[in-house]
Every structure is written in C-alpha cells, then in structure tokens.
Image 1 (cartoon, rainbow, N blue to C red):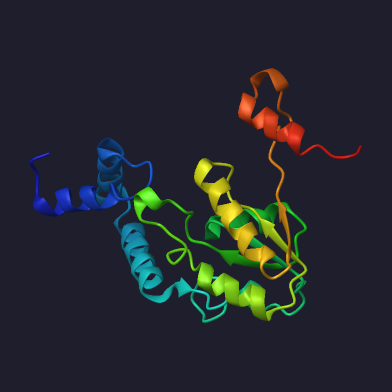
Image 2 (image 1 turned 90 degrees about the horizontal axis):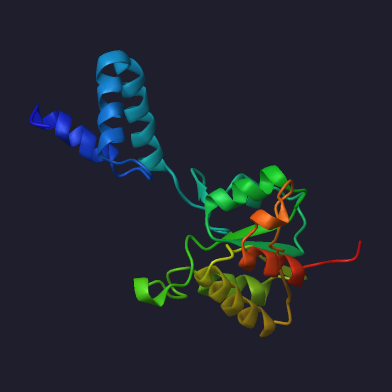
Amino acid sequence: MSESSLLNELVSALKCLPSVGARTAQRMAFHLLEHDREKGLKLAEAMRDALENIGQCQQCRTLTEHEVCRICADKGRNPDTLCVVESPTDVMAVEQSTAYRGYYFVLMGKLSPLDGVGPEELGLDLLEIQLENENLKELILATNPTVEGEVTAHYISELAKKYNVKTTRIAHGVPVGGELDYVDSSTLSHAFDGRRNY
C-alpha cells in the first residue's frame, strides 16, 4: 500500500488487535474511511476514554474505571470463596455462565518463566495477603488447562496450603453436546479424572 502515510498508520494501528492481520486491518480502515467516519470517530473517542480511565481494581485486579470494581463492592457476595482466574474475560465468562457468588482474584496472565512472567508479575504477593488476612474457606483455581495454567494452579495451591485454605480446581472435560470420538485424549483424560457421583 503506497497511499497516504496516515492510511498506513491506521492500518498498522488496527493490526495490534488480536486475530487482525494486514488484509483485515486494511478492510477495516477502508470501511471506516469510506462508509462510517462518524462511528469511527466515536470508536476512537471511546478507545481513548477507556485507555485513559480504566485501570485495575485494588482488590481483585480486574479492569474497572473505579478504585474497586462492582463485584468487589457487592457486599451480598459470599466472602468465604475466592476464584482465581487468568484474565478479566474469565471473570465475565464465570459470571455469565454459573451461579458462583463469591469474589475473584485476577492474575492478568499465568506463570511463564521463559516469557519473564513470575509470581511478582501475577500479583501473587497480593493474593498471599488475602489468604493471610481474610477468613477464606475455599480457593477455587480456574486457570486454563494449559501447561502454564496447570503450573500456575499448582503454585497457588501450594501457597494456599501455608494458610490452611481449602483449594479446589474446576473440572475439565467433555463439553455439553460433545461426542467422545471427537474429544482429544488429554480432555478425555481430564474428564475421567474429574468424574463425580451420578
């Protein structure tokens, strides 16, 4: 593309989004410029406002525009349980899909020494303060079933043992509506390990 440098800058900026390559970014840029400049300006304004005003909750580390997010501010939730997740999108998924009514701790990643992500980067010192000072009865580990997610869950469970907090791990297995012959062996193995009474 040898058009204007502003157009090139817009395309390059759009490529920072996940799953957006050069062709998709180019289509987005041309769509905004040709058909929807007003909505493009609203999008730019909303992005600037969000990027300047959204930070992390002081208690759970999820994204919020307030010092404490709406979940942590909700005194009607169960203070005995804390669910540890990798990202704010995981909080949304649990909130939309389950009847869980406890609080959260958002790691904003997972342990990955090769990528320079250790306990400090995940705020595990803050989690340890909560384990020490709050009367938690259960710590639910809801990290993803990847190698890094499992290592992170194991590390946190060892941390919780120091404070005698019961640690549970969410089950992994066959999705509802799934057929066994299409499920990979690792998922099927997890499903058998996590079986329960029927």
